[in-house]
Length: 247
Image 1 (tube, rainbow, N blue to C red):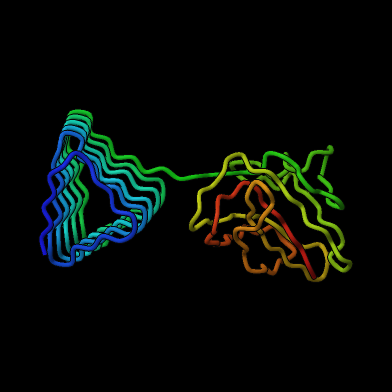
Image 2: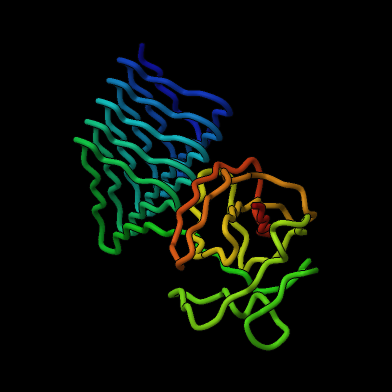
């Protein structure tokens, strides 16, 4: 199957798949926009134009296919996952740009960005506690502000927060975050220990209104400070972190 399009701009809203075919979009401001899945199992995509753009908001995959974006301001922009298992991506232009903030995979494939001002940008989102929202029963190791005890870039065991007694019915601690985190896979790093005979902790991620968008499993704690990584896939934008403990 081959689809050849000649017009100024175009968009596809759900799924576009070129298993063994080709897609071509040509124009001065040629744009191919996706909001879910773009797949080229053994096919190819070509976007050509002065301001050629290939934008996908979910998953872009080239299992054995290829993507080519050519233009003076050629760009590929992704918000979720870019994968080239055995395929290839090529962005060519004076100001060629390949940028995306989440996952980049090239198991047996390749990425190429060529241009006078070519840029390849891979960024990650990081958020730390920066405000106390609900802290009833929780106490800081010093002072009166809790989040300031747990907001280090590199964890320090010199300061900490204490939970209420886990043998009772402890309430949660809820913190505002330094930045919001977009929907999708999130890794939470937490460093904790128990002082009781037994203790567990979990993290709930919430949006700005306090609605939970993701919950980690319960983590059993030891009596020494240990860093744990909890993986959550959220269903909405994260703006808060809620800590819960139990025996």
